Length: 205
Image 1 (tube, one colour):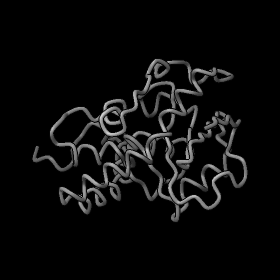
Image 2 (spheres, rainbow, N blue to C red):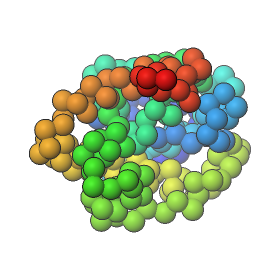
Image 3 (tube, rainbow, N blue to C red):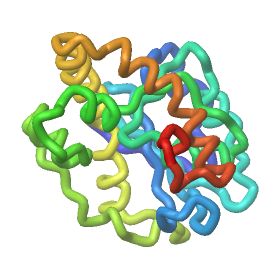
Image 4 (cartoon, rainbow, N blue to C red):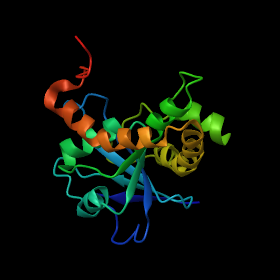
């Protein structure tokens, strides 16, 4: 297992032939229009992680953008709603097709209200994730070793979680429902950017 750090963009051909890529991002905060996108981390499920420190404010990353919009590559997230909105806002692309382990967890693990990545990974994979670097300065001129390790840990286990959650969804007869939710996710992110972030448009009132 190795972690690779790239400046500005993914190298050419780094994920050539991959059909499923786990993706996460790091920002300066959780406000869509206030806080910039700083880092994107990715893994093909082979034990390696690629951490891209983006060039702001131009975000010139054609290889990353091509991957996010490649219809033949499934993009795997945990709480993809935020990442997908950030990519649309700052990179100008709509990420699809997608799978979200948080949505899958909420549909499959109805016996709990603990659907954070740390909780799901602990239960389903027996892996304890550290969140020490979650609230660090991701806009710094360089990333620390600890930041890179943290970023990598957020994508290295998503492939395994998807397999476990798919088995549970199939068992409970909810796989088709989950797929419809995944297909809707990029549209939900667009609604967030358009001003409906705090509103449930399906609610009666």
